[in-house]
Length: 137
Image (cartoon, rainbow, N blue to C red; front, side, top):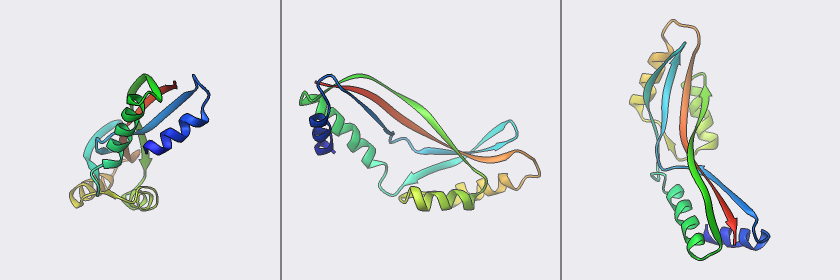
């Protein structure tokens, strides 16, 4: 990852801006929306415990430490995506988030909530995303 930041540094003009967005190492939450009510169902874990996001943070810190970039601002925000069923969620995860794990208890709880005889049901997955702006020095 540091090599990628070195390459970006070479491509940017002095004073250019690098925006870094990636998930934090906080597990994504799974909630079920039943009309206006949001009910927690569990979490998505990763087979590698979100280690790649820590590596990204460490690489950015190393690039700042070497004087390649100066961090100007940083923060976090929640990114929420939606699914209509556990099978839809599992299909998405199998395609886009291959090391994601939804434990059996979370899956069963989610499916039970979705079986309730109500309109306006959906699965909400919330991820904490880190955003930072760096200036090329």
